[in-house]
Image 1 (spheres, one colour):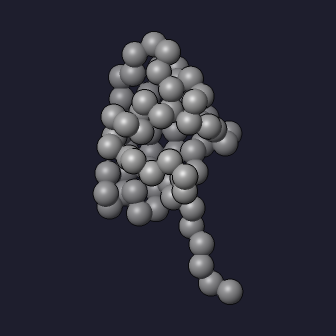
Image 2: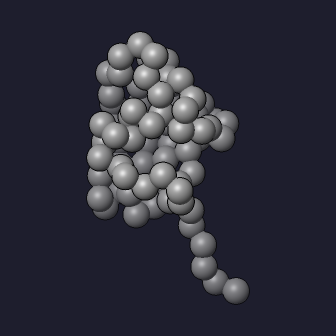
Length: 73
């Protein structure tokens, strides 16, 4: 499974990761493997669609994970 991180997560965890997850793994398991503790302020996109922490993962999934971006007026 391919994971791309964005925003400030890049500086903490790197930009791209390839993980081999056991069958039945969920997005939250992938976050744990990467050491990402944030669970409230996080945006998760799985294969181009907004995803939830308990969504199941498959070998060919692509995740994009980043903290919300804001600012300005």
